[in-house]
Image (spheres, rainbow, N blue to C red):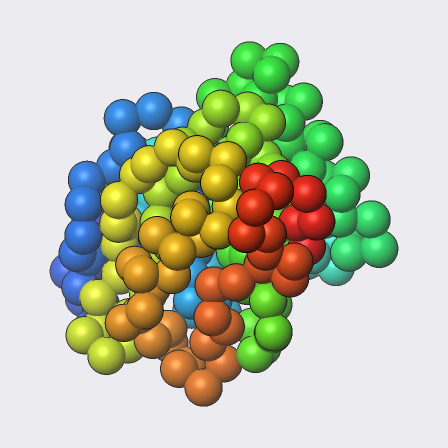
Length: 197
């Protein structure tokens, strides 16, 4: 109730407009892209609270140190050890298989810097849990943010990534110069799952 109220106040006064499609009908892996600013976190919470989506999100473990830890966890944060990122994929998959129900927000373009590739954890989590993917977006060009289409990944990585690239082609992010093209490091063209980077 309080979260929904907070989101109403935020959208009433924000220079950003909420746009796009309605919330997915079932828990999904929510991609947050382009991720170029700390403001993306605020926008993500405002979107989730507006739609009443119970979300978890992945964040670097340094965000959870000291007094910030309980707050970040209360807001749905799951700490990620960047020295062992594959461990968090297994942990999230385990939580979902154990019956936890939540939308998982992932920023596959990584930290707020211009990286060469997207991280593939979102793809592995979606495929291993059977969760669909929802394309969340931030677009400074139109000052809009929100949710795009929700769809099932097919296992054909190149085809799935082409669909994702097409959606984000005109999305600039808060800081367009830091945008990363949606491409996995070793995006296969014939083997659907080998070599994901």
